[in-house]
Image (cartoon, rainbow, N blue to C red; front, side, top):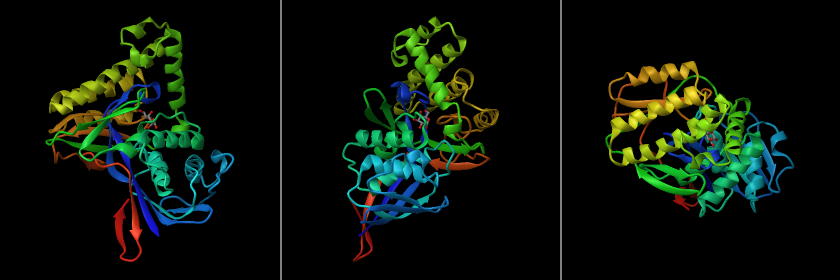
Length: 348
Ligand code: GLA
């Protein structure tokens, strides 16, 4: 019996570089994503890809070190197999509508789609997201947070997802009817393993160790007690960004779109000046897009170091440039069993 599993990529509206510090985030699913189709059975997971060369071939018992296998994209598959420990193998294909290396969480979508296709239990999205997060950390050795995997599993159509990454609690925030999200690509490919992501995380953890408290519990004034000006900037970004998450959630719920746009712009400045993860190209796109009639605000989204800009706009706002996606929040992961008799998909 065939099956089809789908997981969406995401765009983060606000709350970047906060998840791995137990902070707040406000992402949404975008509907572009990764689909795994295939047949369950046997003792191997064997997947081809429409985007990447080679075949991912992994025994259901897992491999010793997923980070060493080839082709490279198979590392994510191997790490997920190892976390999920499926009873049966899977032979099939991976198809993607999501540009990789764009800051739209394509690796999390791959992990979640593969986990779902392998029959992982989706009744506890936090537990499955944690398994996929561990898989990503093991596959590429980057100490990522839980946001991308959790929004891929728990997103609900029409709402953005507020995640408290310490309590691991979720709240759906309805997206305003009279607004639209537009995602614009910088053309700068972003590879987290080669970036300063781990360095930023380490700097924040050093700030927490020096101050003896967690950044999520501190105010921007508290972090001025640090001596090192670099650590002050990093910590200030995290504390102000956490505040902006709840401010944006409230602004969206109250349909205060002009204020929501200002929060995006303030977040971009913080990512650029305090966290130093923007690039001149991203800054330029944000500046240009902000000047377009109908745009409330824009910022770099995700880890930074390249990737995409997210803009909050009036519906149908015309934006020149490489628009990757536009629309309203999409749904999270789904699995369908394909009924061989009638060829009709049946939701599972
Ligand atoms: C990447 C990571 C996430 C998060 C963002 C930055 O997407 O996978 O966990 O840290 O960067 O907000």
